[in-house]
Image (cartoon, rainbow, N blue to C red; front, side, top):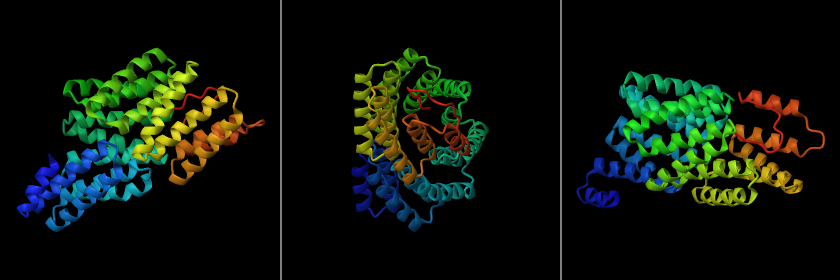
Length: 338
C-alpha cells in the first residue's frame, strides 16, 4: 500500500508525500527484520526531508537510520543519528517524539554495555512520557528500565517494571507492547527460576509476535525459550529452539542475537560434556562481541571461557562485569544469562 501511494506521489511530484511513504516502508521493513533495506528507505527519507527543510521529518528519518544500524549490530554507529534526531525534536518542542528517542538511546546504550547511561535515558523518557500523559510511551520506558534492571541483577525491579508496562499495554491494546512485555515478564520469571511460568509467558509473546509478523523480536523469545529448555535439562528441545533462533538472527543479520545463541549453544555443549565445542563457542562469542562493541555479551563469553578453564580466574571476570555495571555471581553450569 505504501508503494502504491509512493507511485502516486511521484506522479504528482509531491516530495512531502514521497518522504512519508519512505518512512512507512522503512518502518515495515524494520519490523520484518530487513534492516539493510529499511536503512535505505530511511536514508531516502533523510534526503527528501532536507529538501523540504522539515525538522521533525528529518528527525524521524534520522531516527530510522539509527534504529536500523542498531538492529544490524552497529549500536555505536547508531548513537550519532539518534542524538541528532533528539536535538531536532527538542528544537521543534516535540516532547512526545523526544521521549521516544530517549527510549531508543537508552536501548542503544544498553546494547553498548553502558548501563548507567541506559538507565539515565530510560528515566528521562519515563519522566517525559508521564508529563505528556503518554500511556504507550510510559510502557516502553518501563520496559527499557526493566531490561536494564535484569542485566544489573535487580530482578524484583525487572518484574515490577514489566508488570506495570504490561498492564498499560493491555489497556491500550498495543499488540507489540504486549508481546514485548510478556517476553520481558517471561525473562523475569526465568531469572527467578520459575520456568513453567516463564514458558507460559513466552508462549503469549510468541502468539502476539506471530500476529504482527515481527520475526526480529520473536527471535529473542525463541532464544529465551531455548535457555529455559536447557535449564530444565531438555537438551534436544533446547538445541532445536536455538537452531530456529539462529536462523532468524541470520536472516535479520542481528549480530547481538547471534552471539546470544552461540553462548547458549556453548553452555549446552558444556552440559553434555563437550568441552572443546563449548570452548570454541565461547571464544567465537567473545571475538564477535568485542568486534561489534557488545560489552555485556563479552562479559558473558568470558564467564563461559572461565567455566572450561581448569583454573578459572573468577576475580578477573568479576572485575570486567563490574566495569560494565553488570551483576555478577560465579555461574556454575548451567548458566542462566540475563
